[in-house]
Length: 268
Image (cartoon, rainbow, N blue to C red):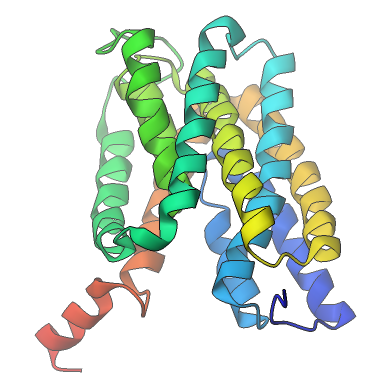
């Protein structure tokens, strides 16, 4: 299987640097994939191969962040492990069914959803590192939110980390720093689950993907350290910025409906 791109050393270096930056940002606020995926497409990769390479490098980054948050004692693994398994199962199902699902709906749905997350995180006065009242039990969260968001990651992907963050804060009432840790754990599960399917169904440029993965691992370690040390005062504004940037990127996506709608409205 041909991934569709022959890279120069300079382009490989640029993609590796972007993977480092994406890993750093993703460990704090999510959204790193929207740096890497367009760059892979611009480098000449076929869309399916670009998605596979992105999942490969993202798995290293989210795995690195998960290790860092675990060492800091911010992930309660007895409660998180079932959620981890369900998120992975959901992403496997999504990756298996991706060709049969209406991704056009997801392209239309995600930008306003990300804007809503940014507004919630930016203007809710109660969001901080203190836990709040939970709206779902951990068992209910495990059976609903975890596999649903994992499924979304297997099908489409952009904003998964932000959705997980919002779910842990809004549904389980976790403080932002602990929510970030658990979100990274479930994001690692969904990345790994989707990658397991893509690895056998799509062409992957393994040398480049592993190089980018090493860079993402290093970047995520730094990003997780910053998040752990600074807590809500760093995570909250960066999450708002990441959601707005992802929403803008998806609003302007030529393959999505929003750009075409704007063209009709403004006559361009």
